[in-house]
Length: 140
Image (tube, rainbow, N blue to C red; front, side, top):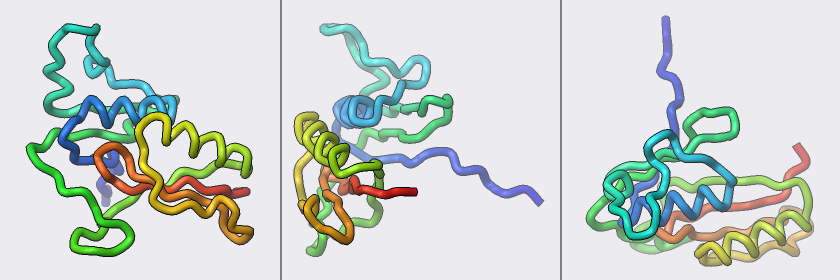
């Protein structure tokens, strides 16, 4: 019996190009052929619909689907609780500090700062579309 194969995580967004660029730069990913950002001043038909980012091994990791309206999650509680979030790990506390600063400079919003937590150093951020994600230190 065969099983479905995991394809990618898809994030809805009101601005597919902006969100794809955020994750492309944050995670050093590449666009699938044909989804690359256009030159300044050129039209962006792909960015108005659906974009896909690939990992270093060429596998699809993240896709971005343009939607007309998206209400941001009210993390950690509230009328629109998160239904999904992404986890990213780094190997050291210094890397966590560096990538937290990078994420903020790329347009993320800090939701919870636990960098100095001796049991689990982490930050919870929201991407430019409001999707929560975590970056934490792990040794595995």
